[in-house]
Image (cartoon, rainbow, N blue to C red; front, side, top):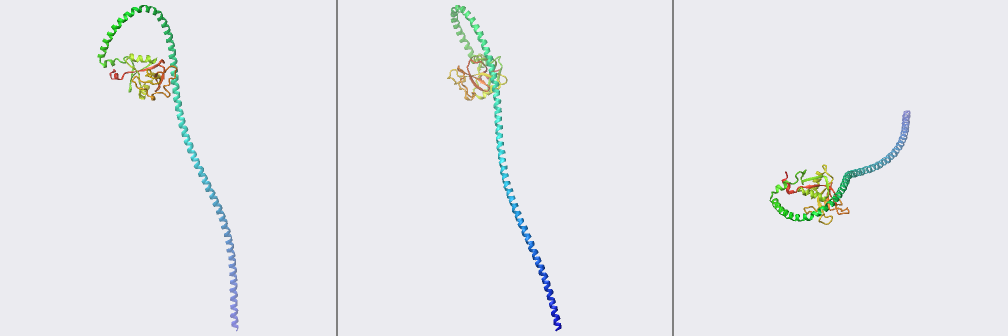
Amino acid sequence: MKLEEEETATQNSDILEIEENATRENEALTAALESARHEASELRQKLENEITRKDGLLEQINALNESKTNLEALLQGEKESKENLRVQLDAEKASADAMRKELHSLKEEKMQLQQLSADYIANYTDTRTEINELKKHVARLEKENKNVLKKLAICNELRAQAVDDATDANNQQNEIENNKNGTEKCGRIGRGLDLTRTPSGVYYFNHKTALPWVSANDFCRSRGLDLASAETEEEILEVGRVRSLGYHVAFWTAASDRGHPAGQFHWPSGRKVASSLWFPGQPDQASQGREDCAYVYGSKLKDSPCSASFYFACQVPRECIPHLN
């Protein structure tokens, strides 16, 4: 009995110890659970804070992306504006170059006009002097005319005989001339003159004495030459290049509308003067009198009264060029 009680007491003691251990473990587990709950709460709070911070960062990123898009659009606009400005600048440069060329051309034309004006004034002065001299000469001729009239009757009789003699002599001379070789005839053309040979022909440029058109034409013919015909742009440019070596800025050509309706200019060959050879607006018949004769000014033609005085160019007939010395 006593042994059973001791065993029972021992068992009870063990049970109490187990209960105490269980209680301690339970308390420890309770404390651990409470600590875990506290930590879970803190982690949940941190997670919420991180989510909030993440949302803020996302908003900032979206704002940055939107700002980036706006900046890219602005940059594209600046590039397009820069390109437009470059195009405008190129256009302005081209316009400035064109204006510079036009200004240079106007300056050259101004100088030519000034030279032409000076020559006109000089020619006018010379013409007035010649007119005064002619008036004096006419007065002297009128005085001499009285004596001439007295001798006229005798001269008429002598003239009739002289005409007959001259006719016979001319017929004989023409027959002799017609029998002469063409080479000999052409060989005498232009002797004593400073001839200039170009791809378009052989010319004599008179840049010393300005004459009216008819006088210039007579001057050329008296030397076996023709007043120059430059029937194409190439010929005018060729003659113009030689003339520009120091000759006068304007000179007569053979073109005129004499024997044709006003403004219908032709060359001696019968060909009509091409419209491309005229200065813009020419021929204009601007003078009160008819402007029936044409002169080269620079590299184009202008019309003028035939009584005006210009320098001129004579041309060797083409059939005589091969026979020149």
